[in-house]
Length: 181
Figure 1 (cartoon, rainbow, N blue to C red):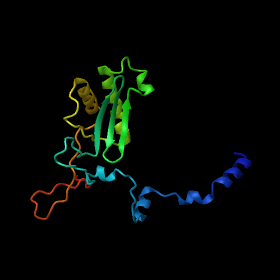
Figure 2: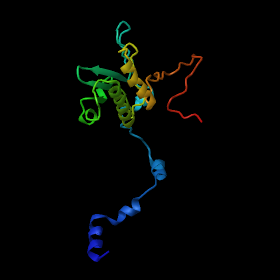
Figure 3: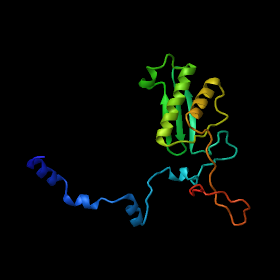
Figure 4: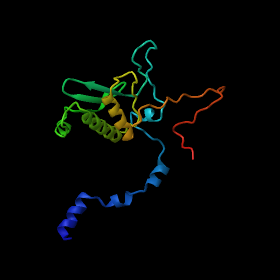
């Protein structure tokens, strides 16, 4: 390296940076409080509130993420909806990158490919459990979507919500945030 490059590097990179490099273990030892900014953390720990709705309602609302299929005359759209925030992940035959690789937009191969794409997008966004309403559409093509979701690692039932056990309860469930080994 010539002298000009060394002087430029010394201007932009302070010399005390190399002295302040620590290992993760030393950072954890000095850590006094943790601020988790993940809004889905309580859902992953299974302690977040699930809205139950009224017991006389047709559509159950006891879910964190729900699978919704929307079929129009030309296109098919599959959404994963959060109970508060609306659509989180979606896949549709309206998307040009999907549309140009399909022969038809309504045949069974389109449904299978949408299921694969949605599963990949869900896994990339951290959604592993999706509520599937059994009273939703009953057709072979919808079953193809469900089968592809399961084959690609998405579980179609959400885990039950953890409820703290009372002192008089006979069974006490394991806490989901504790590792038992």
